[in-house]
Length: 313
Ligand SMILES: C[S@@+](CC[C@H](N)C(=O)[O-])C[C@H]1O[C@@H](n2cnc3c(N)ncnc32)[C@H](O)[C@@H]1O
Image 1 (cartoon, helix red, strand yellow):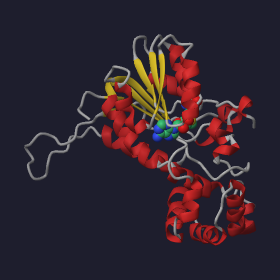
Image 2: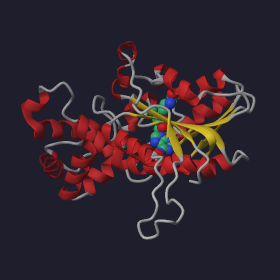
Image 3: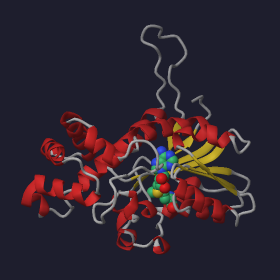
């Protein structure tokens, strides 16, 4: 797809807006600005401000153009959402009314073969959202078989991770996405080729998550949101696979557990844990059939949302 035709359809947009409930005068953080789909909708919903953050310089350049239409209500900064509190401080404010994270890659990134995220089109084995640091090619060409097995098994949930890792080591150096896809396809054999998802899907997911330290970023991003949100501020996170959703679910259930835990060694001392969030609903929101039909990328999306309490982070 040529860059001129690309766009990104925001996932669970109505549900995210409902969770954030944008208000006039409030200041929100969109930690995964991407194509600006959420940011635009938030700015349209109320006379508020948005700080957009993205680690991809292309997304930030798009954001800078969009910001020109919003009279100072939209600013966009390059960086990781794990640093959202420091980035937000650059806007001159300390506490935000709402944070939204829409995890993973955007269609802008995925559909551009040169970024190396897709096995369907040939491109360099890159996969770096920030366009800096070690690329997917660096990992597949230098990591030992044991490390590759662990990455592909843990982050791709690939049952035959060892077989794939061994095939990669035997075939390297690998430079292109198609080359890697073919190596994986061959290693997994005809049974995998008959499955509904492409045999290379899990290996590509694993490498992408590893290259961008996506799970580490998510863990740190959630605690950064906890620090930056004011009392009553809302957190909304859209996850696309079970590894991400598990982290969000665990964080929110831990932080929203109301029962204060007194210390076993000093039962009369002050409670050790006070809930910093309360859940807006106990179950995640998922897209309906109509949204999935219109936007297949939404298929696996799960939104979890919570409101910040007054307890210290
Ligand atoms: C799914 S897209 C967001 C799409 C956006 N909600 C929209 O409606 O256009 C995810 C974006 O977040 C960015 N991103 C992913 N992880 C990030 C992180 N840890 N810090 C900053 N940006 C990140 C990616 O570069 C990508 O542009």
